[in-house]
Structure formats: structure tokens, C-alpha cells
Length: 421
Image 1 (spheres, rainbow, N blue to C red):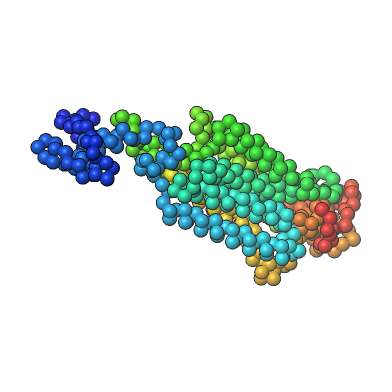
Image 2 (image 1 turned 30 degrees about the horizontal axis):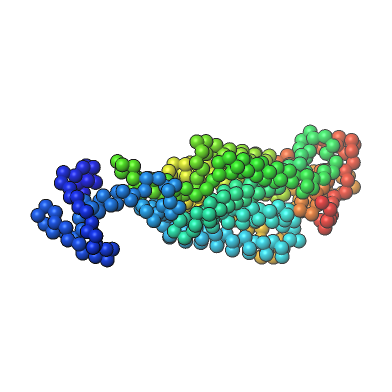
């Protein structure tokens, strides 16, 4: 203790090992020290000196640092909690996928665009899988497996979130394009608008390509891999405690994740803007639920980023924040965007949907004044009669209706069962 506290020893002993001493008899060797007899291995001075000259000063000197020094690990209970989160989301995704396929012909599903709903489920599955790869440490995995887990965690979390968010943007943007001229004073009001899934796929494909480029540059220049760093050292530089976690070693290691966070945040903000712009057509665009969903994602992303950045070497806090972010973000998207529709289908109300957009006056002189325009599900019908829809908060005056009718006659409404688009 004197040497540990001060680095000096006032009284020491020097001795030459007896040639007859062996590994088996060493613990029984008696050495006289300061008038007392000690077993050689029990002498404090010998033990302290032996431990110090065999200590670890650089984590790179051994593959398994934790076999030499005390390491900080994430509690096993948190890993179990992470696996439970994965199981909940997986179960929800599988059940929703089956029900979505069964009820794919229901009006409420067609209106919500089933292709985009399927992509949201796929993105949620990819994003949730990242929790599995972040639930690793050196107690059960080799260095190579930990490096692979670090890479998989980042790629799955980034691309999964991009797929989900970009799909929401594409879904709402498609409705915006279809209804672009259904506003007061818009020209060509009777013109049909055709917007297919391919026309908005650039949001999804473009977002994924940008993320892949950023991740490729990141891992090509400063790989995100498992590293063990000292958290406590003595005055001689010997490591007393260390912690292992995924990290990049470069001086600008924070740049790449920050670019990804900003990119995803901007996309979420744009999705919220689109939801606001299509709020009058919420029966088609799901803008109300999408706005809540996107706002929830923005909050989670900001809070998770700040707390993880502040957690430092507290790997337990960092892990539970990242796992909860992946779980809650995807659970929220599914619960808000998909579950309500499937629940109505289970209640046999999937076709009890008023697809008419109210608040417009009929512009056809030959039809009864009470008839309303209608629209088929955008998942199967990519064009609609613009004259049959209008902002439900605005009513056309008789004069404007007469003017529009005399300028261009309207076209027939699209049948509900159309398979075009």
C-alpha cells in the first residue's frame, strides 16, 4: 500500500531465488523480512512489484484487454431488454405484413398505397435489426465479430431509418402532386394527373444512395470498429480500468455521423412540411398521422443524438438510448401509419370508407347537385379527375363554377375498381 500511495518504499528486501525452489514450492518458501518470517509470495513488496512490471500500459498490446485489467461492461439485463424490444417489433412487423397482404384489396388499404406501407414495414425491420448487433461486447464475441457488429449496427440503423422516412416523404409527395391544381384559381382544373410509384421513387432511391456514399466514405477513411480505451490509469501510466465500445479513431470521427443526422433531420422536416401542405386531403395522404409520426421521429432523433454524445464512456446509458431510439421510432411509425387501418379491416370496416372529398360543388350540369367527386386508392390508381376533388375547406362560388365549366368540361370520374397506376 505504501508503494501504491507514494510510489516509494522506505524498507525493501532483495533476495536471490534459491535454485532448489520450484513453481510448486515457491508459495511455501519462507523469507525473513524485518524480523518476521513470510511466505515469499505473500510479501506485499514482492506482490506489488510483480503486478506493476506485468501491468498493461497500452490497450493495443493485447487482443483481450479485459483479461488484464478491470473492464466496464453493459449489464446483461440491458441486453435482455434490447432483445425484448427486437422481439416486439419483429412480431408486430410479421403480423402487419400478413394482415396487409390479406386485406390488400380493401379500400382503406388501397387509399393508403399498400406498396409504400410494405416499404415502411421493411425499413422498420432493417432498423430494428441494428439492436441485435449493438448488443455485443468482448465477454462473448471475438474482436473480428465485434468489428463486424459495429459496422452492421451503423449500416442497418442508417439505411433502415432512411428507407422508412423516405417512403413517408414519397407517399405524401405523390398525393401532393396528384392534388397540386385542386386549389382556388388553379389552371387546368379538369386535367387528369398521373403520378405513378416510379415518379416518386427518387426520394427513396436517392436517399439510400446518399446514405451509402456517406457510409462508404466514412468506413473507407475512418472505420467504425470495436476499440477499448482506458478510463483510469495510475501515475506510472499503467491501465487500471478500461471500457470497450464501437468508435472511430480519427480526429474528425464526429463529422460523418453528424452529416447523417443532419440529412435525416432535414428529410423529416420536409416530410412535416408536405404533411401540412396536404392536410386538406388527409383521407388520401394520411397527413395527420404522418405529421404526428414525423414529429415523434424528429424528437427522438434530437434527444438520442444529444444524450449519446454526452454519455461519454458510460456505455450502459449510450446503449439503452440507442436501443430505445431504434425501437420507439419504428414502433411509432407502425402504430400510427399502419395499425389503425388494419384494425378497421379486422372489424370488417375496410371498405366502409368515404373516399369522397367534400366541400366542392359539382361542376357537371348533367349530374345531380348532391353528387361528390371520388378517388380510388393511390396504390392502384395513379390518376384522378382533378375536377372531382377540391380543398374541403374552400367552396367554389357559382360564378367560378360557371366560368370553369364554360372553359373546359370535366371528364368522367374514375371507377373505384380501376387497376391502372
